[in-house]
Image (cartoon, rainbow, N blue to C red; front, side):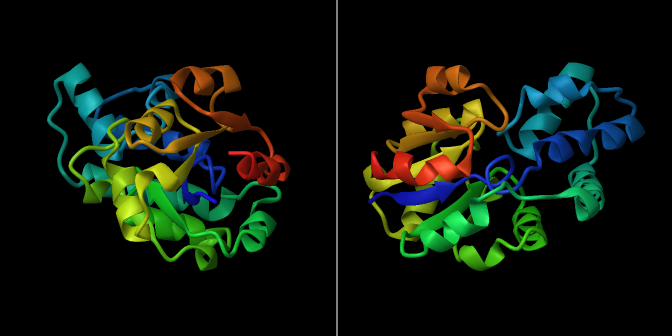
Length: 211
């Protein structure tokens, strides 16, 4: 059986719309009127990468505290609206014997907040964040860190991802890539390199067993 590495946003918590939307008021306060569709093209990338994109586009040298400001905006929105996906809590309970980790582009505080908010924190002891590695997705660094903490060879790891950049990172890490279609169509995830895709967690056990 493969060790499992889960992305967080869009995989464990239904948060991509909140995570992307949290940028809008923050950027607006700093003079940038962004469109959520533009931010959605960067799903899977780190907050720093998103900020660098807008800095290059606008020429604005954003203050360092904008990242903390954006995180607080996410916390505010997610406190009342964050949910997990149907069937996922039971799946994690059923797969309790399978080593697993979370590897997310989000800050460690955001990962812990999100998991605790939907009651999934008890299922994960190993958390990895893009702030801990030199390069975020689509570079393989984050998933290689997760494999290291699992004590697993990357070839015996499978990554569950909703983003194009995450699927690419998994393949570059030499891991199996399982695409969850919460953010992108299955065809796009397969084009990025997903071995298999699924739309509902009820389908995951059979898919995982067949890897």
